[in-house]
Image 1 (cartoon, rainbow, N blue to C red):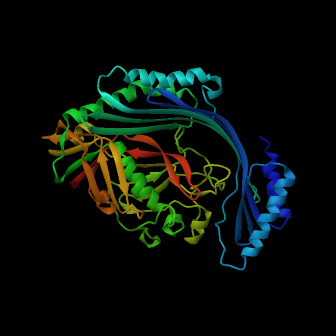
Image 2 (cartoon, helix red, strand yellow; image 1 turned 90 degrees about the vertical axis):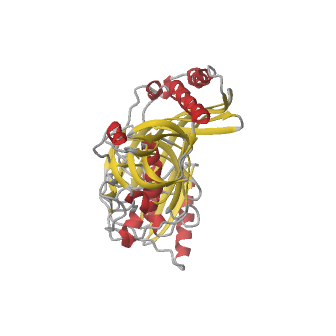
Image 3 (cartoon, helix red, strand yellow; image 1 turned 45 degrees about the vertical axis):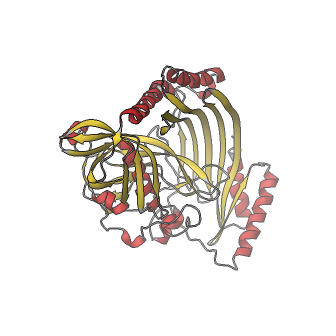
Length: 470
């Protein structure tokens, strides 16, 4: 990586009349493989390198993305952007940003097993091992979709204020999707794995066994599952269910750019307003955080894409709305400091407010204790599908693996129970939490053009009292 290009770009912007500038030079090597119903459909190998900039003239701002890294070309494009910013002064385009501390740092995550040291043949072989594990079964698995991918991303962030941060982070990914059919009825499940580690994580994950077990549970639900009892009942929601609920109904609506309406035309709005900070939305058991610092996690980073140091953000604290996810712009709008939530998926995307690793803090119960204390209800261990409105208020979650609870014990399997609830009702219904946390990866979409970024979501199992099941 020619790090001097980022420094050159910032200096050139200042020389040409910018008040301030920042540059992100990004280089990413990536490989991916896809097996669909036993056929290898896609293998891709590539390298992406480019420069993304934010350039300011007083309170007016413009962005630049370029992958032609010739210095004269960069200078020419900066001139063009500065001319555009100058012309935009005649319209309302002023953006104020918070002043933040500057840093100089190197963040290098060294993989135990570098993806480059693993042959293409071995990577493809691991996909066929998953297919082989499923071929033992007699039931009909009509969709078997598996991908694995790896990358190493180098990033150098330079700002005119003095920040210089270099990072080098590996990423190992896997995704699988299954559909099991029985007498015309189907059951589906998918799952992602994303880890900022080397290729060694795939040996630990044991995907053939994990996916095989998921297929058997899907089949069992089709053949043995009974209809869920309708109406109101107590529900124990598994960590995966709580994870998607927290991501969708506490993470997204607490993104400050969404709250201020910036995402309205793309991803929607939020029922949360700035005035709601300090108001109650859940019981005392509910604390939801977003923390990028988790080592090896999908959403890992030490500094965001504006150079702000990462920290834990407490979105809900003991049932009280505590803070939002901020970049420099939204923080200034609320007279705050940024909490380091600005991320971009690539050099050619603008850094915007994003989640990282969003989860609910644990409680005091073991799974066994929580089940025993629930005399009658439903245990929804994981989900098949979910839906939520564009203000993140009304939502539903359809279970995949779910069970009836009778006299404090799991009895019959239930087929696809659906929870329908509002966000406040969800968090106000929680009266007990498990002591063990599980986290699950996902690819979170937002922005225009679309930006998909890796995140984690999860928490403990949670008991929801008197919830409507449909």
